[in-house]
Length: 312
View (tube, helix red, strand yellow):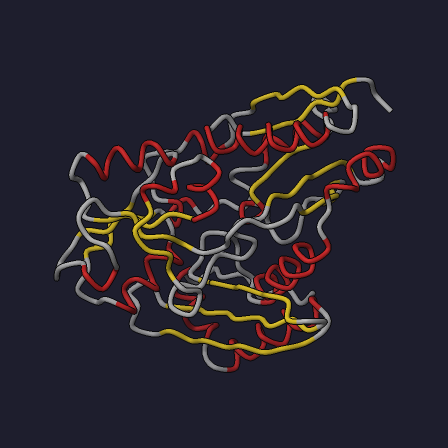
């Protein structure tokens, strides 16, 4: 085992919080840790909405290249940024205990989504959020919003928006829970697959590394997020499509809620099933959504060249 472990991370404030959090846990076990910041494709294209970029692995590709070249030994990601099928040679070695998976409404003047006036401007970078917002409130003007959490909050405070929607996990990790006005229930705003969970990626076959960080893996978080990612894989979706998936454990059973929504919110398909096997449940819910017409929505999003969903 190497004397110093190098963590690859994006350079945003939130990404560095996440990398430092994992580094702290590793140091508590007596390991020496350094963090190397790596600029990804997603960090370089800031003027275009994520849905229009549409590049799989846009927040992970350059970090994986550093991992393959042995410039770093492990990578810390927001799990929702990781493609459902990792490139050959990589493995998710740990999924940490999950933070709150919900989305939150942030607004200087309005306490709830229901309180926003007709035609209010709401900012979000996510097609998933946009579609569900439009389904709930057809009158809202949903506009693209890129940038880190602080940048988004500054734009809100400058009056560019009446409200913005963010992930609860990122807001909490940065100690900005004071700005939250409403936690949006998963029944009305279904989260992204893996939202709120951190993943540690390593080179496949690096047994010493997997053993060293194995204590970070949380069984419940891995089970629920694997279920959500199996659903996403069944639908052939990446992280920037209008698909929501949220699994939770109830005793020994899993319940998976999922939604596929047209970007304008005019067509929303929901499904919820229970099961014991994460992959089988994700597949079952995905196939149920496809039977109800989800493929037509996804084809419109992907365009004529839509990929055929890959069966797990």
